[in-house]
Every structure is written in C-alpha cells, then in structure tokens.
Image (cartoon, rainbow, N blue to C red; front, top):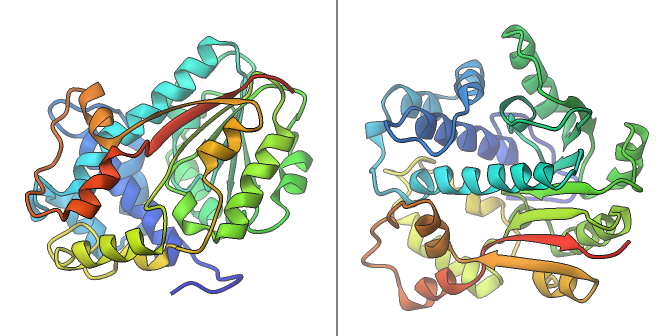
Length: 302
C-alpha cells in the first residue's frame, strides 16, 4: 500500500513495476516479429536479479501468451517511440521523460543533433540504472541528463537546475505514470508541464482506470489471474491511487493543447497486432477499452 512520501528501490514498490516493464520489453525485443528493439532491457533485469522477472526472461512461456500486459508492451512502447520520432521530425530537440524508470530511449532512438534528454526519477532508481549502463559502457545518442526528484514535490526547480530551458519546445513523456500519482500530484504535474512548455511543445501519455469504481472492478478481475501472470501475487494495481483528479485530456484542451487520443483496440490495430483474448471480461470493464487511453498533445501557443 502507498503512503505519503513513500520510497522504493528497483526491486520494491513502484520501482519493481519499472523492472517489470523492462522484462516485457526484453521479451518483446526477442520475439520473431518485434515491434521494438531494446537490448538494454535485458541488462537491467539480469542485474536486478528479481526472481519472478528473471524466470520470465529465461523462459517467457511461463506466462500465458495471451497475457494482456505482456502483449501490450510492444504496441505501447512503439507508440511512444513513434511519438518521439515525430517530435524530432518537427525539430524538437529537448525531451523530458517523467518517472523514467528503466527507459532506454536516450540510447535507442535516433535524436537530432544537439538534442537533450532529461530523465526524472528517484535517486535509487537512477543510481541502479546508471551503474548497469556504465558496466556495459553504453553511450547515449543524445545529451542525457538524469534528474533525481520526486514528482510529488518541487521537481521543476531540480529540472531547471539540470539545464532545462522553458523557452525551448519540449517533448514530454508520462508513460506508465499517472495511476501511481495521487490526484493532487497528477493535477499539479499537468499544471507544471503547461507552465514549462513553450509553444510547439508536445506531451505523450496514457491513462489508467478513471475512478474508484473502475479501479476496483479492474483489480477484482485481475486478481483471479495474478498467480499465472507476469507479476505473480504482487499486483501493481495496489500501488495505484483512485482519488479524484481532473481529466487531463479535457484540462489540456481548455488550455490551448491539441489532443489526439486512441483506444486500446485502436492501438493494437495500428501495429497490426491482435487484441489479447479476454472472453470473460465484464461489460463494465470492456467499456474502458472504448476510452482514449493513449494520447499525444501539442501546445499551440506559449
């Protein structure tokens, strides 16, 4: 369970979810028809030595091939890879990855000359990540700058101290983040992003269940499948907040951002991947798939 000011490392609490994402990216990378190439993901999982994810990395068949989270990782990662590629094609040279976890896009993607990529996360996560990358002598393809900060606190000051320029258009990313923030912190996050964004800035994000009822139904449905799933008995949904918060898509649109969203079925279809088979999905949860869960936004004025 979460508490105000709670902390974690790479194998506990929120940090463990980043390790899970790295595991699924490694599995996707090693498919015969991968949507992404993230050779760094395996390094992180091997270095962490977390038993459940090490087992999956050794033998992905221990998870049902139809597992939603396993199948989601390819389309989800590719969607945000393409988001950054499109931003670069429009001349954006500054990026901020919020709650970066074990994201290796500073090393994987083709950035414009002179591009700077800021990665914000807790110090313990960044220290682990930097050690693994250093042990493998990895070289980023952009000017990568790590920013040790808690997104529930005054992270803009730390970001600015690291060289962030609010007068320069920025590509922001909030992937796998929003449900892990209290409602007040999420609303504050978007207020700060808006304040720090010059005209032409972009934002990529995806949203989880929208409210307490959705989250509880989602948790009840998933719990029966946990033991055979990628997380074992340690569900990441217990780390989510379900308190009140503004709808970020509506909030941004009211402030001069043009938002384009797609649903989960549209995401799978856009990369020619079949949706995982979930025949017993309750109607009220099936309805969640018709919401724009993945979205990008562009600020039209400063």
